[in-house]
Image (tube, rainbow, N blue to C red; front, side):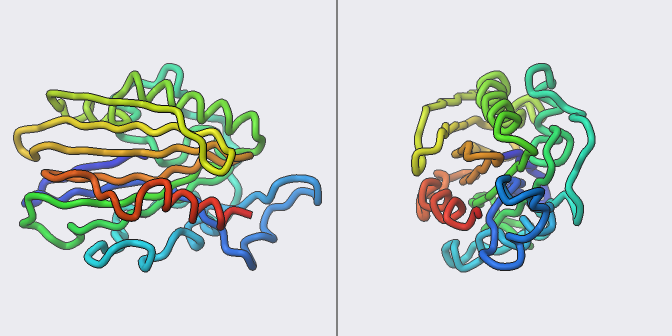
Length: 237
């Protein structure tokens, strides 16, 4: 989802929010009744993300990009609303708490971890927002698609002032679940060309996302966003 680029040499940090659930202990958390979907805390979601072995050699876990909403379900009102959020604000907060979710978690794997001299590289991200109801999740998913059109690259273009911005959004379906893919590209003199692909799926009370980003190169294609998403969905209770 949201990604952040910092310049120390040319280091990319891809920040996403993520969901995957272990089949064991995580299933028990937060279940209000037998007829309701499992509610998981951010910490439980973070513990169940796709592991390092899912990604190709050379992609390392980037602790600095990890985010999770903690050991309790969130209950506060939404601080940000996708219908009227500014693109600059979106670029700084998308992928974190504040959108009315009950839990959120994220991490990424990058070829640029601890590499302060690289001028090109790539990263994968995985993410989830969990909501109290399927209707709330659907509203967020629809808002995400709209804001992706209005704020290319999840607001990154607005934050960093990219030129030559293009974004293509297409409808998709993953295991019968509604989805869309947003493909973003742009250029910035100090970084070169950046390419970001995001697959965003609505299933039940969750909005799940996988991302692939390339700086000075194409976004990584293997494993594909669809493959990563399928593996995430298989882990969701």
